[in-house]
Image (cartoon, rainbow, N blue to C red):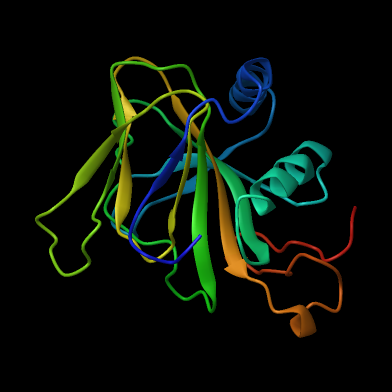
Amino acid sequence: MSNDFKVKEIDDWLDPELTSYLSDVFLNRLPHYFVERSRKEGSKMYSHDFHPSDVMIGFICEKIRKLFDYDINFSRIYFNIQHPTMEGMWHVDSKLVKDAGHTVMLMMTPNDEDGAFFYRPDPENDQYQRKIHYKQNKLLIFPAEMEHYGSTFKTKPRITLVFKTLKANIQDEPNGPFYAVSYTHLTLPTTPY
């Protein structure tokens, strides 16, 4: 996969029962925190960060690795929950990240009114934008430096599972295939729990 400003879409990427099960777990059983924003001045939404050693997340990471024609690592893995009115804002995922690759986003919840992914395929023209309608179990892969945002559903929460990738550099990996990344609210360990 090249680093141009295109979005790759894959419908029905995971087993549908697994997608529905994970959607329910994310919304009703895993703690999520009211800390996420597209940009500093934007409205908050809920999120939960994962470590790649989580068995299910590790399985999904391996499926994602097979989609790339170069080695990748993951700088962050998390889900977002946007309730109606928690609108996203235009942003990029590569800010302050060296060797940012692509963002991989899986649409988790069943379809609802509205709810879409908007992106700007031309970084020189902020008036030109494209829209991808939300569809449960659709995987999107796009360059981390591409401007984008997600609009909310009208009647229920919208959940996305997000994997931010880095281009792998084998000599920088003394602790295995995943980087230790610090966030303002979380530090991921480099060894399994």
